[in-house]
Amino acid sequence: MKKDLPLISVIMPAYNAEETIEKAILSLLNLNYPKERIELLIVDNNSSDSTVDIIGKYPVTLLQECEKQSSYAARNLGVKVAKGEIYAFTDADCIVDVNWVMMGIEALQKADLVGGKVEFIYSEKKTSSEMYDSLISMDNELYILSSKGATTANLFVKSSIFSKIGLFDDTVVSGGDMEWTIRASNSGYKIEYSNAVIIRHPSRKFKDLMAKGFRVGTGFINIWRKSGLSSKQILSNIFRLCIPTRPYYIRKMVKRRGTTDMYNKIAQVWLVAYLSKLSRITGILFSLVSRRNKNCLGLK
Image (cartoon, helix red, strand yellow):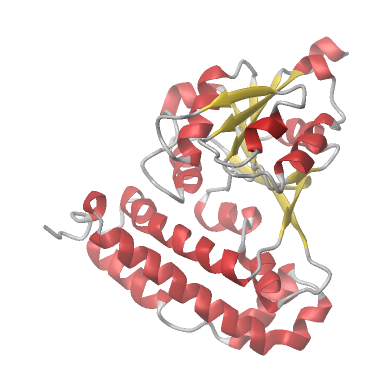
């Protein structure tokens, strides 16, 4: 029976992750899957804290991407080294469910790529920023439905796809996972969502949420450009981002993905939503004036 199970390569990039990496590794070591049929590849990306020392304490394979500061470069190194028939991607601040791999394999029986469910962990005093983060972040169900893309926080991929369409774009700070999965979908590979493939992620507080918004914003232009959008369409998307989200849509998000206590803080969550939009717009504007994107809107 064990010989019939596919070899799985788990690929996890890490950068200055000393606060979360140990719990992430322990969850991987606790997977309900034969140890001899899984390889755990942790790719350090020039950490300056104790991340490497922590990784070294556990029976995992430590790789180091020192040439390029990019989580996608780190993932690419993992892909190049991996031997598995299936690649399972997650992040250094995620805790995987004990049945994560088994459910991922099952879901791949009907698809080529599978984006899984991300559940959120809140602090003892759940803030409006944490609430909003859990409503909009890493929503693989929505990403797959709307754009045929998914996030590498929880992604299973048949390894052969990389040899056909290439690696992640390691020139971007954010959005490389969405760009790659959309590229795979556009190449004819089937992507599906599974709520049985579960990881857990800490919800972000205000400062981290704004930093994330900026980082995500810097990747938007690249995603839009590679999706074939015209300059006019890109400008239209930027304009729409400037419009505050209506409270109605906040309530709708809470109904779909939130918890009942969030209804009592709709106004606070709405404010965080608008500030998060502004942080993304700032990231977009930053990317527009950077050298690598100056020509995407016909700028010289």
